[in-house]
Length: 300
Length: 252
Ligand SMILES: Cc1cc2nc3c(=O)[nH]c(=O)nc-3n(C[C@H](O)[C@H](O)[C@H](O)COP(=O)(O)OP(=O)(O)OC[C@H]3O[C@@H](n4cnc5c(N)ncnc54)[C@H](O)[C@@H]3O)c2cc1C
Ligand SMILES: Cc1cc2nc3c(=O)[nH]c(=O)nc-3n(C[C@H](O)[C@H](O)[C@H](O)COP(=O)(O)O)c2cc1C
Ligand code: FES
Image 1: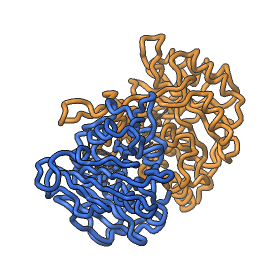
Image 2: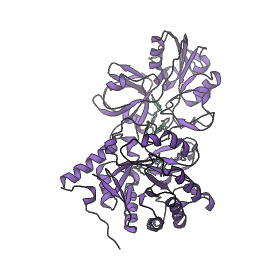
Image 3: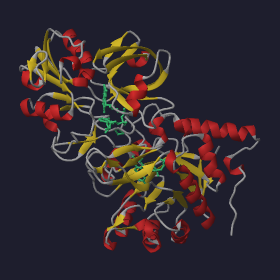
Image 4: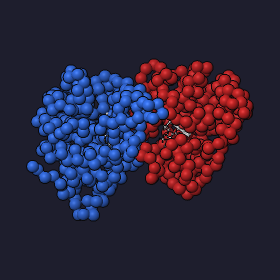
């Protein structure tokens, strides 16, 4: 079941998605054998308290969240969690966040070489304070600048997590590939809104939130596919995966691996079930590894 | 924490529109502490699980108490014996009884009885004298199963017991435990800053990973109702920021 994401070999094609798995230490039920890797909750240099409640609301086949990247800051992460990760038998990627390219760079420099940190997933769905709050991920130059800033501070794998809120994901994908990304993660949540008719106000205190879950899956498969067609580096598919078939759609659409998020809230065994289901699918077809799956990836 | 494929074994009416559902969940029944909850999912059903306090334990069975307030609770109430739900728990941090309180007052509003029955039993087993003050809108809305050494009823319309709120009707005691709508709990906090209160929030995971269940703290920042909570020291919560409406009519 192992897959190669660039130079890195994962023992399986499924990772736990950022923000849906905490720091990996919370859920004792977890079947770790099924994890190819994990991405930790998004972290900033400094502690962040996050947004006021309500922070989540259920929507048809999905949910909106506005957590506001609550987190203890990088020093607490290094002190409290990295030492545990160092003992685990799967790699932990840190989802890194910043308000400027310099902040991403400083965060990377601080984390590089810390035992337990296997690599970086750059969350470019953050507002760029130096550009009037425009999201890094919406602008190929800003996205490339952040990628480049991180790339220069580490030799560990650098993955860039793309936002779906763009008119052409291929443009961003190519820009960050050129800036030195080792892989792309597609996609982060879609921005959505839900109104409470009892009070004529948004249900989330932050007004908008990120939509995740099965509701976004076909959109995510398409965007991951478009990203995969645009670049040569591996793409890790994310969005609404709850079953092995869902994950296989992403793999056939051109992804090398996948991440599972919201589904683990619903079913704490989701990752193990996806893992075992993919193994059964491959076995039944005489395929020895996910890399042997036929790909639907026409190059133009 | 266990994930149990739980068979529903019974349902009974305990107040107007308010039911107790019994389910077979042995590992949860043998480990749950007062104030803890379970996160229940079923298929077909809403995507996210729904959190419920463990109301009572009866051998290998646990009980929850609920009213239909939305899609999920309505579906749960339409289930019949033999139906199965996925039950994750016990979750959260419950009530603490500390060293040597001699008297306890339990204050419950409406569905707030949900986390009180286990607390009453625990207190009694520790030799603590229990006064349970249970309030609701009217006589018909009072849960028929409240018990304690002393039992005080309160109704908004005065149709049974004291007219007014449960908080106003309650005496003082060494230990105050409360559960009910967040608005009622804010009143508890004003009267007894040291009280332990069980709050409600929306929940994503119930296990501490999503940070969706944020409870605003007086000292700043948030922590998780599903992990550090749902039971808090009343004075630790920033009541002005904790949503009191959630347009949630279950615990009036
Ligand atoms: C720790 C904890 C323990 C709980 N214990 C009990 C219990 O013992 N008995 C009981 O009846 N209820 C309890 N609740 C509340 C219960 O979880 C909600 O009533 C339930 O999730 C609503 O689901 P629904 O699908 O019926 O409602 P939905 O259709 O999702 O929503 C219906 C209405 O309920 C509101 N609502 C939804 N979820 C919540 C929530 N978590 N808290 C407050 N309001 C909500 C919505 O704003 C909406 O107006 C508890 C909640 C928590 C967090
Ligand atoms: C509660 C919650 C918190 C999240 N936090 C982060 C985060 O900190 N950083 C990030 O890059 N993505 C975050 N995400 C996005 C997920 O990692 C994932 O991209 C998205 O949810 C789509 O996948 P899913 O449908 O499998 O959940 C979060 C998602 C949820 C639901
Ligand atoms: S409900 Fe997810 S952290 Fe509490």
